[in-house]
View 1 (cartoon, helix red, strand yellow):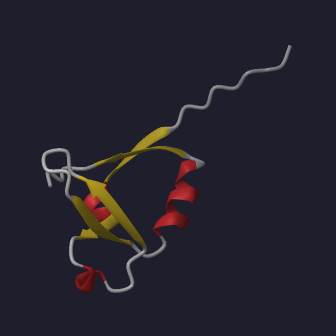
View 2 (cartoon, rainbow, N blue to C red):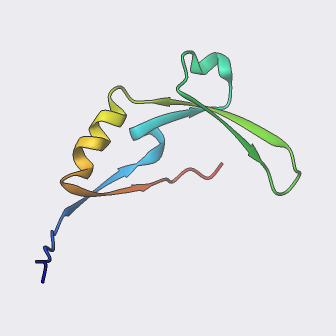
Length: 79
């Protein structure tokens, strides 16, 4: 029978908005943005475009941490 290993990882939690990335509603404020997201709003069917800038080295940091920690990402953003 193969041996099963259970690895207990500690958890790290990050606030999504303002810590891991910054979300802008105006493209001119988000010069050099990393991602663009279009969201259709339920209440009026309008499409809202958001521009996202990642913190420097965000992807590299998350890849390194996921090997050793359970990563939890949350947001308090209401908009």
